[in-house]
Length: 480
Image (cartoon, rainbow, N blue to C red; front, side):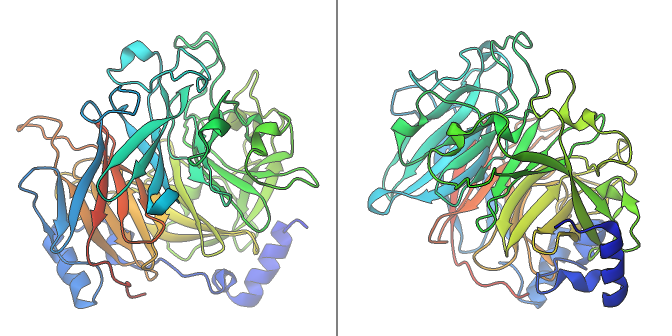
């Protein structure tokens, strides 16, 4: 049953401006740093957090110049592009991006790691190797690798090759990985021999299941970022990172009688199910054209869904098939993670292409109430080169210790940071690998933040040159 604008306005009037519709969902709101992002001294943020027992204390610089961590924490390099090698002998591919973990055999942890490599293979020193039987388009440089981590050894092999610009992705309730291509290149563009902009499924536990890769065309062809699956209703939610116009948030509804499971997606017809884009309205029933207009955490929007006409975008990009007033847009819709009965969704930043500028938003979509609630908002950071203020949230995961862990992809200093249920933020790690110069330092974004199945290890990537790290230490339950 559709939740109409009139219904939402009526319920909002009853509950008082609509905020109460969020029910028991934890509100990541009201953190001073999250609301303004104007503090530039990390010691001040850490001291304030420590007074409340939030976080793990100040970050300690790494003598090896790689990763600053709180006292008592340590890291291990799992893969390093150009240094570690696959089982087949080639170097680990570069540009690590979205990642998730899965329980492996005999206590091992399996990870599927996207490699965000766009365009011809000749453009990259370490593309994903074209492993026989696992190649979609031999001209493309991207794909995924599977990493098996044990206490004293690491193994890595190709999960899918010949795809392009594999970005955030997402795991499934049945134990596989969905890897989206953040591109709209067609055959004949940028050296490609096949159309790109699809989602591919990779099974970390069954190498045979990955042979003869086939895109899940039912999910649409556009600049994919993250994917999550509603384990109860079967809907699949997808984010799009695009501009001119800004991208969309999508929902795929499976066809009647369809049951998810291993191998089921690749058997779908290209037009199976229904692909829709979201349309938001406020508590007064007014249409919201762009998510950047929300400036106060706790803002709640009602959500309707609008059918996509041509999901394969044969002549017109999917986001361009809608006219003004038909759908809601947002800049840099990126990371997403399923938790607390819904989807946490990131808009990494907004600038001149959006109605209101910001340095990041984290939203929560509640499928039962059909509402989208702003949990955290980062104001424009006035000095990204100064340590302390967080900006540019990207990949995200729900922490087993409460709240969220977020990978930073902004300008200047790059962090992994936590956000509690009440919205307070705290640092977990800082990238100290300078890939620029002493005069003009540059630090790559963090990606692929995800906990091991038992919660003991936080995995994360430094995208450039491509390093997977395992972080361990005295994790603790964070205050709300």
